[in-house]
Length: 473
Ligand SMILES: Nc1nc2c(ncn2[C@@H]2O[C@H](COP(=O)(O)OP(=O)(O)OP(=O)(O)O)[C@@H](O)[C@H]2O)c(=O)[nH]1
Ligand SMILES: [Mg+2]
Image (cartoon, rainbow, N blue to C red; front, side, top):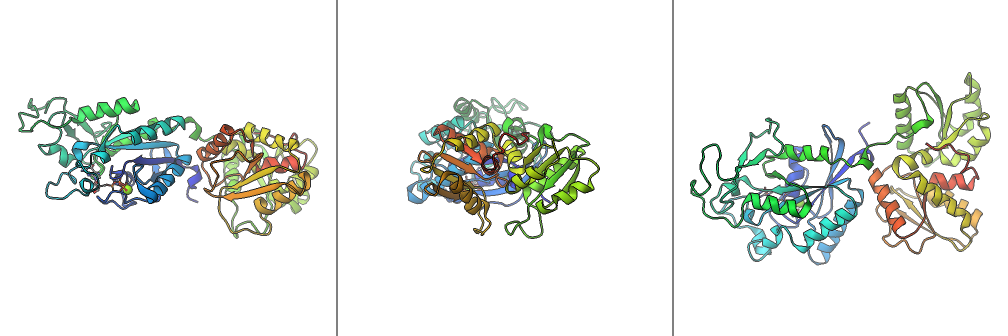
């Protein structure tokens, strides 16, 4: 099975229109993933590309619409870019120089950016304008590490009207010399020949590459990686920067933590109802089994109705039972004396989110009454089914406990409301389709608005009265 996207490091590529975001994603992937054109606003919806980055592991790159897009449609596109940031573990921030605005350095071509942006496209390439600053501030407040990338066209650099000094040295096409950015500067002309830019016949330029680099470093606090996205030159420096910037939250914790040790026997009780996908197990089950096998545990699987029968076949009691939340009560009642029981949702509360926040969120259920307004949030979209846990089972359970008068809203996928203030509690699914950052982002959104949040497994354990009895990782 290929690594699911939810387990991948999510890297958003953002910047203004025509800054070369799509060209960079194509260069990173070594193939055409996104459409590249000199028409500003070519990329509209975010485009994802999963790939393995040696040293960083499984990643997914998200190409986005330029954040400087205008008008009603432009605002909608920028909104999508903003949504993509909710799952971004890091952001590649693309900059393009005002000097580098002449259609890939080809003086014979008309640059469409100039047509759209009077003044030679400067608003597209202004390095430190308000919108750039606004997005840098957003990333900072969201704690998303950034990798500033300065996209320069080697062809433009070599032209006499661009970068009269500070021209770069270029490495071999495959960057195989291991240099960090693949494109390095000659501080004053060509150090190797002793020539200055002027001596090479270049005229005074509006700014040097070195100036731009310093300007971006001032703005972002980091020296930019310099690439020529169109040719892929310098791309190695971007990979190196990704490895250096991997945030702590995305370093995968284990699912079972200290609950399962090497040599343990772990029983997995997995309800297979009409909602279960045909012919396969769901992701949390597969991931848990894989982890237990990697840990050197013996795993034994059964459905809730076969649990007693399966226990009798074992020579002793299992060291841990992991069950679907829905079967929690049944499994709890049938467990051998002293055997710890937990659920996939509880394990994933820690793996994907923040178990303490979810635990205290579930405890607020004790304080809710028949007037409560509850939001149920599902990560994935699927056609509602009669045994649907989020739309049928949990609402039934809540009405039984809190009263028929409670109000429940259900949202799926990306439709998580920005304004949560009307809710007394959010109950989120196990989020197997989301990466950890995405879940942490929702927790943070709820925390900022003072709305408690928990997940399915915790809520079900609360309803069964066994919240305090379940084993926590
Ligand atoms: N001069 C120059 N042109 C480049 C460079 N990188 C990309 N381009 C060109 O700039 C234009 C825009 O590139 P894209 O990669 O489509 O830019 P983008 O940021 O994805 O643009 P939008 O999707 O419109 O936001 C294309 O014509 C590219 O060929 C570069 O390093 N230098
Ligand atoms: Mg694009």
